Image (cartoon, rainbow, N blue to C red):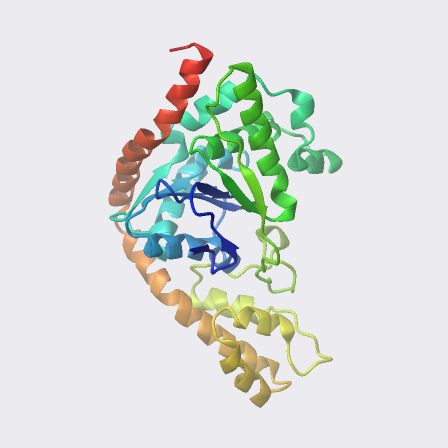
Length: 346
């Protein structure tokens, strides 16, 4: 068995939790439970899709008998979006995104993090045993501090909520990039401290599994595709948006093959087919960009049209979220109840 296109072998049993910078998901093999989550903070781009969203759908379809949960991580998103109307819109948009890419509510459970109180309750329990100097070691905090940013408590404290998300589901293995290893260390340390203080084995200690050579999706300027760089191609872009983005791709006039164009193009067409196209049109950057526009639009169009159709009935989408929250609460409550027994509040 493998995860993410055979890039990461899974253990024979136990749980796996993945938390990249923007997207994350949890895969529990033994219990056949899949949980993934996204912050409702921005319009997704093709880098988000190929970097994680596609894997969510692949895992759903590869494991029809598994119990699958897809979370809208709105409490994490609150660190970035602090306007009620915007947050409500982003939540609906993300639910639509989930459905449009192929997450099936008949197979999977879609829910809002804010509707499952176990996450924040457990985070508060952890807050009472975690020190401020410890959290000041977090990479995100130190980065914000170095940039002289005013840091809110949510940003300062996000590793604790993140640990709660991980530990609620008895996670064993955490595959991460080297730069994300600290996420696992925080979860391990918090679990170990809780177990020590309350003389229990309530929480397992997750182990990091470092993923090597994980590719990144390049943006229109050749850097990693990121909204902060302004170099994205929106996932549900109109043809006009696709054309504008592709035509803005930075090209190197010193070579016959525009590598920034090629590196995006190979996401949508096999390198074997691209070889002929690019050899036939050496130095013809406009022709190659036009070919890329056609291939991106052909790929995006079915998802874009599906999303437009779903958006016509937002009440149905909200109903899906409500039903999902009921099922998610059933799953998350067991570990929280055990923790609350250990601390003596029940």
